[in-house]
Image (cartoon, rainbow, N blue to C red; front, side, top):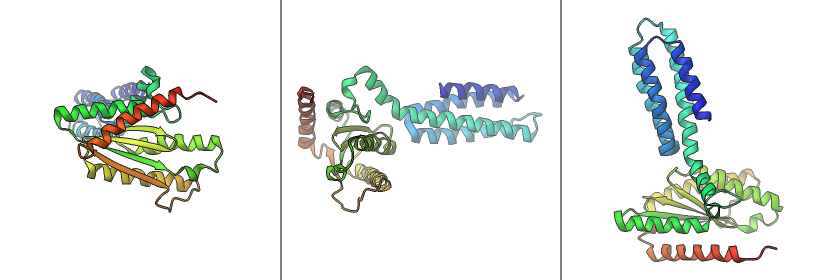
Amino acid sequence: MVVGVCAVVGTILATATSSSTTADIVGQAMIVVALFGGLHYGRKGAAIAFVGCTGFYAIFAFGVRGSVSTSMVTQIFILRTVVFAIVAFVAGELHVRLKYLFIKLEHHDFVDDITSLYNSKYLAKLIEKYISEFDRYGSKFSLTNFTVSEDMLTPMKKKARVKLIRDLGNSVIRGNIRGADEAARIDGTTFTVLFPNTNYDGATCASIRVKEKISGYLDRRGLDTEDDGIIKTEIIEYPKDKDTIELLAVNLQDSHMKEKSRPLV
């Protein structure tokens, strides 16, 4: 709704004050490009689409302005630039969040209740999917486990622990990976990120960035993260660690079944 309102209202305001038909058509078309870039490629695609749309539109706005004054063209250009930015970046954010929402709506059993990330059952399915893609196309992928020490959270009250786990998964981890990457909460304070089409070195670079964000969040909460054992990371690559990853998929499925069968107390 936000994307639609911004696109429609921005276009109406711009066309109402402009007499340059060519620039208007290009401006409207660029809104669609900005929307597609964000929705299809995520945050990075949104940034690229915004820059591209703004630059392309500037050529027509200032190069084919007709009898419109420079000040009026500038005002229209600024308005459309704001529209491009809102549409592109909202669409990029939707790309990251909606895939988890759709899975939650269609298959509630695949989503973690606290963080709204994928759970171990769905991660097992994703691993099987990417193994199958490797068999067909030779596309490598990597997995990184992030585990925050439970001892650090023991003194916290239950409500505070739940909030911390939710923030770690929903904001810190998901907010610092690509739209194509898959994030899951395995159990407790253990999270896994699957990096498609990424080798060990690429996953290592991405994991270092995510670990730094986790550490920064915990520091802001007043928790000491100077000890290297507080945040543990384990990186594995397929097919380099083929046996480990295939066994992990089986164990994830089994652990989810055991968790479901465990009686509630």
